[in-house]
Length: 607
Image (cartoon, rainbow, N blue to C red):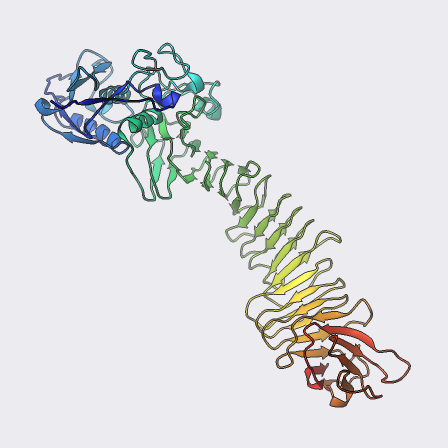
């Protein structure tokens, strides 16, 4: 006869080893069956009838979703795992795989004094810890305090010990004899978070049990899509704590009740510490909820209408607390926080990803959060911090302030007020009502504008965006102004500016008093497409219209005569204005064509 059991080696993990009994079944297909007993107590039907079978089938299906085992129902005579029921009170017993067992009997006692109907017992989370406990025995798990079959759970000597990190709780492992510990010694409990003491039972195997059985039998892919896990205040909706085993997709835990809730996306660490068996997702009125098995990644959390606590994990999470004044903790990863209440609080650790707050109310970024997006249609405001922030408005008129750091401020479609603060800031302008505010000596700043724009004081650079034919004008600083692919008019204003038209038929305008500090560089002048436009108020010797040929001289081709007013040295790219030809006035440089392109009088126009 083939051996039905195998010896299980150490998992090399003290927490997991604390519930491994030493043996596992060799077969990956295990059969189960039901005895037929007449225990008609308080209206409870025969054990072999109706809901009782469905209850066991549900438990076996939940376990099979986590481990590489198939459970198949058969007759009691042919079953390896024989299920039976006792009417002698609570408790139960079960054998397990090993040298003396080819089949095992799992028995659970019903206490007729506390169980009034089948409905009291046949749902997970209501007295289900005994059923789960005994079934886990039948698969090879041992008690958390059993030192004979293997090492105990860390910190557990007696069955009442809480264990290191409070791991000896039925929520984390059904193999102990203790319920959850709600107390101030556990920093992540209802007692601390909600000021309420509650008790709870497991609605599934705990994270420690799942890890142990996966070591013994192998893991199985399960729930690989984008899954939604909901819990509510309704006791008919949730009974007990369910440990989530999910191996893929973009998943969400959502609270659909009305009480205060806590959703914690961290998975069990399987270390002898708080969180080693998982972190609790629950509400202040619910004796149940979720924990997350080791290795599982749940990405998103959605709270309810009250003041919730949402905690992320090491990946990029979306944390949406709902309408209440919520606490949102993203931890590592590139997180997104949804804010809709002025009482919402966002907290992030340093160097813990690049994070975004989406807010429908006025919001100031807290420490270590990089980006802010204003949502909705109200005129709300956004404020940055000392990091390099990206602040984006909505369609209304927003007031955006970057504070310190190299910020990007985009007010959105409304007429916005944008203040960069210190740092090298970038402003995105798309409305003629947008206002850019910069202090002197507060960094080197740039405006990216899809409309015609004159730079505000203390802003150095301008880039025209989009595809429209628009213009850009500088200020008293030495500006860099860059056009888009359309026909642009670029005017550096005062100061020594750098002008780049890019594609399109561009005009380079000169409209401020000439001088040694006001010489502009045209980076990409095209004699075919572009035009140099001169103001007759500044270039007084020239009359409006196209420049007559006799007033222009290329110094590399001919000598200067008394009629010449614009002089161009193609060898150097320097362009001069001579107000009186060969008179006493000296020619003044006002531009430099960096590409030293050949030009003629036809490339000039006077306005």
